Image (cartoon, rainbow, N blue to C red; front, side, top):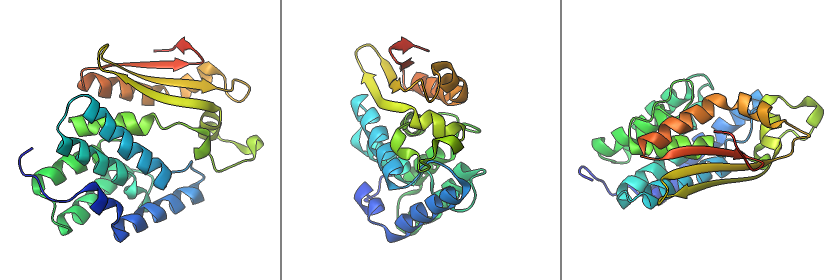
Length: 224
């Protein structure tokens, strides 16, 4: 990749300012009653986005940029949940420019961050596509902070209902599958699908950008 720099994922992960923004952004979401968006989520997104591109044969630097974008993608929540993808992209530009990343690589990272939220997202490059798949597939019970089931909102229910979650990439068959096992006493299968329809449609578009077919399995049923 031309226009490369020496900024690594380890540099990003150890950056105190970035850690502060991730922590404070999650505190904002705690106040709003959202599921976990802290280091567990961004770390998982970073690794998944990296692994997707590596498995598909992209060069290591592009995969590392996906890792960086995955780690930084939610910092905009420190400003406001509304339009957090765009504000996060602007924040990431300032941070990455300040520490010396090249303009070409910054462009790739901030484009991915600015295009990860389902309201405005478009998989415009491989890093953006990988980030979308990584972010939207992170559905798990441990993301739910509220333990009072009677007061669950829709997102609490669908995340808490997930007993097992796995994102499987089959390079030979050119498929990427989100495989979920859910507790139907908490959320019905079709309720889950209805709530997450926009996310899954976005995953389908991201997969297609990467030359893959997106599949969703819930309790053994091929939903899409």
